[in-house]
Amino acid sequence: MAHRGSIDISSPAVMNGIVYVGSQDGRPHGLDPVTGDFKGSYTAGANIYAPPAVAHPTVCMGSDDKKLYALDASLGALKWIHNAGTSISSSPALVEGALYAGS
Image (cartoon, rainbow, N blue to C red):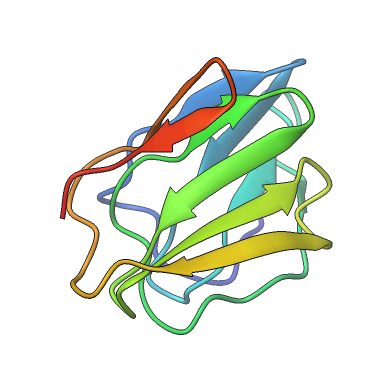
């Protein structure tokens, strides 16, 4: 499986046949479940340990840099960042357009 950072803590989230996980290189990874090929070019400010939340066409994740990120499902285009004030320790949840996360 080709990836750049250690993917050993984040649980996966699946959307449209792509497996999304966080990593210790601060990058979210979108993995093809058959080939292991990955996509993604955005880098957060620190490790991403908590599992991402997915709702087409958005992937949301928290990082150890105390921010929540919303990215296009291509993992290259940033939609928005929210400063949570502390590290994000749980998987965010997307419900009817609202994002909830424990920190």
